[in-house]
Length: 391
Ligand SMILES: *[C@@H]1O[C@H](CO)[C@@H](O)[C@H](O)[C@H]1NC(C)=O
Image (cartoon, rainbow, N blue to C red):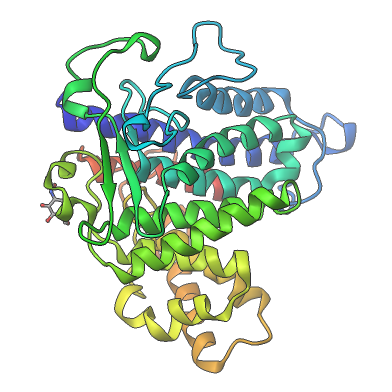
């Protein structure tokens, strides 16, 4: 496999696991047996709804999916349950006077890419926010929170100044020279940083989204930590929005791994999460009246992936359009309606029997792409996820 494919494959697996966590949480509950009876016909219950009986088969799947995060951990392990894992990368960040030992490895290699890692944290947070009570019923909430915090601890340390954020630990070319255990690796672990002169709005905004979403998760569980995450999220968003650019324009070498095709989707995604985390009307105005027309590509449905967050943003903002917000102006509401219409177009394209269902499906109506391309591949995985969600 080419190094490019390999690097992307790794985090695709991580992103897939994050998706699986959400999916398995839903499925575990949706497949619950109705009220102790053994009836075969299961009526789908409103999701999220109160947790019912757990079907252990799906509960176990959720547990296994979450275990993946334990396996991927970098740093000094706490309560490690994986017999063949140990401490590793304890000196990551030391050359900059930072502790970047935590976070998670790319699968198959030991580079830490902040961009897909942060996206994983955002999606994991969303899963906990929507289905946390179901995860808890399946005894999987604590592992999910543990995995999330392992990433957000890294993100906090990777943001040592307002306009400085570390986007990569390790060198993929060095790393890929050798298959080895992270516990015994000996390669140099160089750091890559974005700042005012070398911006990376795509990555800074994704990290802002992750920390804003996680701040909501931890709000009732650890207020101090939640506040800390929110401060970092707000500062990172300001940095991303003020010094605009794609990280791979600042560092062309980055194009070989998780090349983001743009940053405007991440800016909208981050601002949407910040609005949910703070209720601050400025963020709502940012995504609607200020930048909606220029950034949101309304009416052109895409897939949700580590590269393209527009579909996620549309669904996230539809919530506000559905449930309303008293202070919202007419112009803002118009913008929200546009997001909601786009979200509906995305979902109707995926639902197998909707009038606007898109083609390329298996006999079982699973959507597929016939070409193999890194971004298509990522999108494919998320289509699978969405299809399970809505089937
Ligand atoms: C990376 O993305 C940029 C922006 O879309 C694009 O111009 C460039 O060709 C991409 N590079 C690779 C190697 O795919």
